[in-house]
Amino acid sequence: MLTKLMKHELKATYRTFLPIYIGLAAITALAAIGTQVMRNFNNPILEIALGFGIIIVALSYVFVFISPYIFLSLRFYRTTATREAYLTFTVPADMKTILFAKFTISFLWTILTSLLWLISFLIFMECISDNFINLGDLFSENETLLYQILSVAAGFANNILMIFTAICLSQLVRDHRVIASIAFYAALYTVQQIISIIALLPFMIRTVDIISLAETSEVSVQNELLGEQLPVYLLTIGLTLGMSVAMFFLSNHILKKKLNLI
Image (cartoon, rainbow, N blue to C red):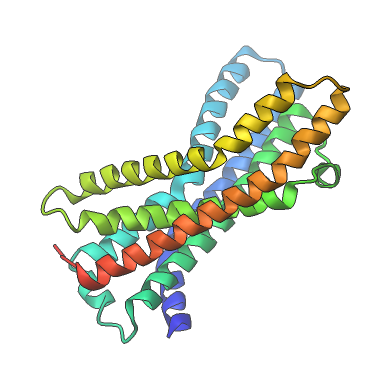
């Protein structure tokens, strides 16, 4: 049943993201062509047009990056908090399966959108700077790259579940549920930030001590700081995943026990 639910979610959402990806490719191509034209033709009118074009490209990049959160949250709200939810919850599957299917597809779309956004942005920066970015050297020189990738992926999952939980919590409110969802999201974000700061405070103090009390060479200081990064990444990933799991089960409980459709 989980596979069928995921296929249904995929079919219901790909029509939204396919035009976004096509638009991203078109903007990247136009930006690349525009920068090449500017290099070959020194014209004030073209410079003004390029300035407007850069603004459009920047706004487009912002929209593409946040588009998964916008459209997937709208779909989650529509299929769990409105009358359309009657169809969602008549599916012969338990609430955890339905919720996990929605989360999985949302997570996959978020990852794919972020990867395409990154590729497009690198191409655009390559066209502007005319300086080839050697990603192989970047990967080989970054000793914590794997933990950074895991941290980003955990952050994506956490953001999605935070949106889901905020929408579910809004069902506990009688009126103005959209505003309530935003308020609950802000509250959840604030609570998570407080928990993270408290958990990471010893490492922050340790980092300050290393910098302020360093009496050895700069290289040794860098090595000390690098040694502190690994436990920080592991703790951050663990906290993020732990809070994500908690929000998943909270959302499941609300949808199962406190469902109040409008």
